[in-house]
Image (cartoon, rainbow, N blue to C red; front, side, top):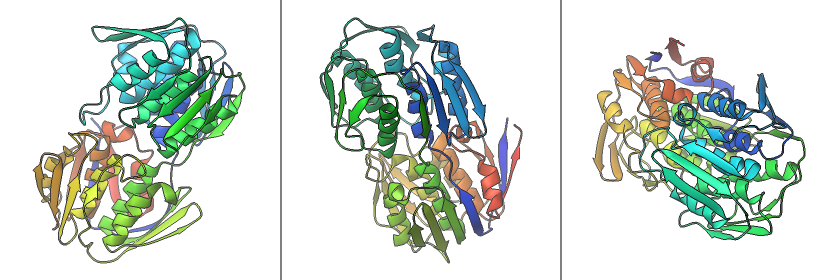
Length: 417
């Protein structure tokens, strides 16, 4: 099993590029099913989840290839409408294929998705949105069967601004007659990126990034060339690593406004951060100071995916920082592993009080994607050697992580493939 060996205590200095966003490329890959043509996607990160999404497209009949950071999907032929369990179980976001398959084929069969165990992530909002548009859906065992006899645009009011449910509603609505409005839609930047792709494919979509999204009429089929937006969570993770380790790091090809809440927290912790265009530079000297309460919220609030890396950084500082997790109930699983490194974290329900101190090297295990990234941040800042196991979780969302850390002067080695 692959693992990282990290020798901590080195300041990070240098410049690295930010990869394309995992949470953007996955729904856009699913959307390539809709236009029945050639889709050229640039800035596609080479991630475990992306490889599984490409495998799903190939299973459905598409021709898929990668050259560098460009993925090409020819969806002219789609001759299957099912996704088997062995493909679905590898990632939670595989449910995003439900809407596009239904829209393209008129029916779909998927097994319940897998992914990180970070709490309940029911797909009922996805299913209720598709039912609202006219889909007939039934569940049998671990399978979901959908059929679309007469899809019609309607208002969909989400009880929570779910990113996945918003995306599935958008992707299904392009096959509906009339107009669809998604009310209380998720506002994440990845939603706006999906809207841009759909517009290039010929869809009439507006409101992406706002609380009401409108999709009008059926989508003409056009070939598409599109560049995936930069990954704001990778950006946040490297900012937290630089804050924890000290030094000066410049991140290029990113979007500062997408990580505004993270930048604010780190500035309050004593870091100097400058932004210019698509570049962020962070300077960190001395120990971090305690931050005001960090409360995760839907975008534009503090992202739940950045909570774990920031918590790792807070463990190295002075004073106490309170974290409140409002999105997923199991988002603190990394805290027990951080405790192996000497972290003082006191958890009560969905709150975690981090009492800053000094970390030391230890053998720890990744329990999920972002928790695994937090362990790497902590290991880089710790005194001594750490071994981070089960890094297949990390591979789901970070491209060439060890290579980028090494470029910044961090001492990390990947053992195994």
